[in-house]
Image 1 (tube, one colour):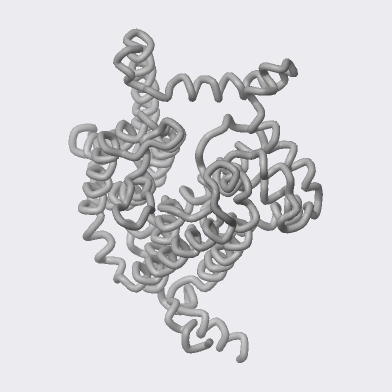
Image 2 (cartoon, rainbow, N blue to C red):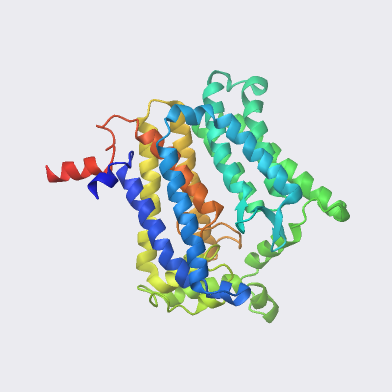
Length: 397
């Protein structure tokens, strides 16, 4: 075992938490899929096997990426961004439709789908991190400094917005935070935010003025979710029906109490759409309890802390920005899932990294960890242990 563990370089704590979550996801996916069986048929073993395939692909990707020297990740940043952009454009015209949204690319022959925005998010974080270093001396200049940074952000935002407002908004806010970390002047960030809000209002206005053009085909869905969240205190039959998903999620959390109903014993998961993904946190609390949920939150916070630690210890600015961006993105995604399930945010489609039923989100989360571990393994031994083996040796001594 010690021999195998020695191949995992980088931060040992990140390895432990990530592998622990991915292993635990096999248990929860098997338990959380009754609603999917009702809708699409099959058996728990069918979905467990499919998830296991994604877990294996995710681990293989994470391992392969973490062995790549960090300098090569910086060198392919621009190429990765353009690949992500091409995937988004392809999805815009030829994407597979699910639940009224065309966010997926169907992979031929293997009956698997890939959500192009998952790749585009990571590619954008890495590319913007590289641009921040390249434009570091020009951040006071709009033409030579700020606009080259904004073009990739706005292009990605615009291509995702049509079918996935929550992901587009998250990408924009994360990009603004990354620019702030990269020391873009505050007044320029405020200006960008104001212009962005004005541009979004203009697009919404055009959609309302020209409804037949279907500029934002899911606009009514977004507004219904927001209105249902605002009217959550309304106890009329119509309001209860409209808020059924959110109400069932909150009820599942309430029923879970401190220690949960037990693995496989949750009942409300059979009435929660995507209990294995978008409503993962609610189902998790129902079966494992709020004590386990607090522990889960702690694991995500530790992941973020370790990534920030790597970002602060590296002397390479690109690595600092990319590690920070990846850490904040993963925590934000998990936080949105929790806030939706607890009724703080309107219903939206963000799942729990490393835990929700497998797909492109799981694979790309693993690739993200691989990128951070690539940075971590190049730090001096005094800053971070290079492997599990070195950690074990220190404990023996």
